[in-house]
Amino acid sequence: MNKHKSVFFIVFFLIIAFACSTVFGVKNQYGDLTTVYIKGLNEIRLGIDIQGGVDVTFGPADNIDATSQQLEAVEEVMKARLVSMGINDYEVYMDDSNDKVIVRFPWQSSEANFDPETAVKELGETAELKFRKGYNYTSSADDNGKVTIVPQGEEILKGTDVEEAYVSLERDSNGAQTGKYAVSLVLKESGKEAFSKATSEAVSKNTEYLDTAGSGSRYVISIWMDTNCISYPQVNSVISDGSAQITGDFDYEGAKALADKINGGALPFNLKTETFKTISPSMGSGALKIMMISGAIALVLIMIYMIVLYRLPGFVAAIALLGQVAGTLAVISGFWGFEDSNTLTIPGIAGIILAIGMGVDCNIITGERIKEELRTGKSLDSALKSAYKRSFTSILDGNMTVIIVAIILMGAFGVSSSFFAKLLAFLFRWFGISTEGTIFAFGFTLLTGVIFNFIMGVVASRLMLTSLSKFKCFQNRKLYGGEAK
Image (cartoon, rainbow, N blue to C red; front, side):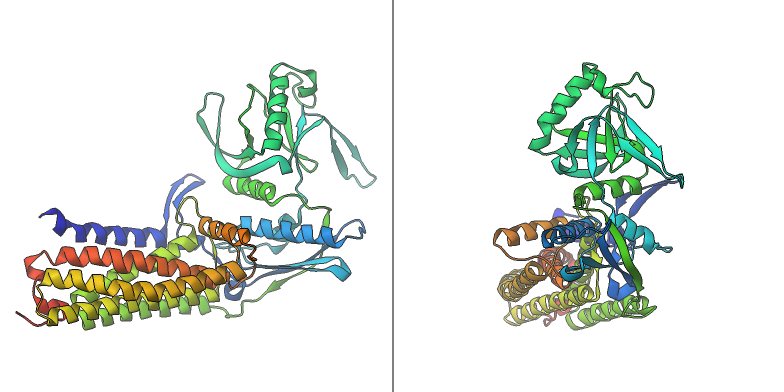
């Protein structure tokens, strides 16, 4: 078998493997620890309209008369926290006259026993991060036994000095992984010099860095989230590159929650929950399952139709269509390591369906071109080359129009935590275009679907069909819609 003939099998198995890993994901279970290498469809967060969610109203605690600027700051922090959680189907708006901020967001994906009170508490936490010299604090108890902790030690850094926080694996002093999770920090320029100076002083055994609340012999930098000390690691070397790590008894979810709080920023004042209620899905119970079954049946019928109508090109088109759908779902689920999971809403499903329609249209154009070229009497190889060349212009024109519309929808109405969406959002904001709203899901799934239409419907299908045409058993012109010669 020459290299041209093997191309079909390579592309075919790659698409099948990609589709299977997109649906089921790739995980490793070791005791209670589950390591996710590739996220599956169960990682997709479903929107409020599909599975319901939470409606909560926040107000200032301690009878603070909040200003419009402070409420706007709360609104932006809420949005940042929701986005860091992979939620783009949300609503956040403020009631300036009553000092209220209203938030609506969907249930946690794949969580059977969703606790809305815990979710609301995490969202509304002040979560102010501070690095302090040493580990020292004072505590006092009121008449009801409530203990109040006041951190001591001079402040070194604040959460605003942190550029990025992300989950990593904890390493010991020898650089070996301990099996526990940690939160890695990348400091801004404003924090690098101060942290370098602090670690230098700790290494020099400055008494301000003593662990006076613990062993009394370790020189540490304590890390506080509000009045809760989350870690007080010993400083063994000077850190001048702006990288730090928060260690503790973290599991993955705990480390992720802390990283999200740090990335989300600190609220300008403490919040209290005024009201919260659960929201029923607008689709109704079981509607998603019915929709998935209907979608699968429709996809199979479309594939059969393509095969019956265009024969071998139709068979290749069916494989390419499967790859297109898998690619779109992979982007939504966060298949790649740099991609966060996105929220799938009803408008998002509509975008997927429309993109599938564009994929079918792409393959119909190509199939008809192949028939036309064969009718002119060209050889099979010449007909295939000419058909793909002539159909590309029509496919490009149609899909570019949809891409432009999808990008405009994403820029004008949407925001997400995904890498692709962040890149687009940056470009939109650079031009002064807003990036908020829920219709984003429609534009996002439509855009990714059309992009994978080009990859699968144009590139992959051409590689597969050209490869099959090299086999003697597939050189009958009738298999391509032409007449026997």
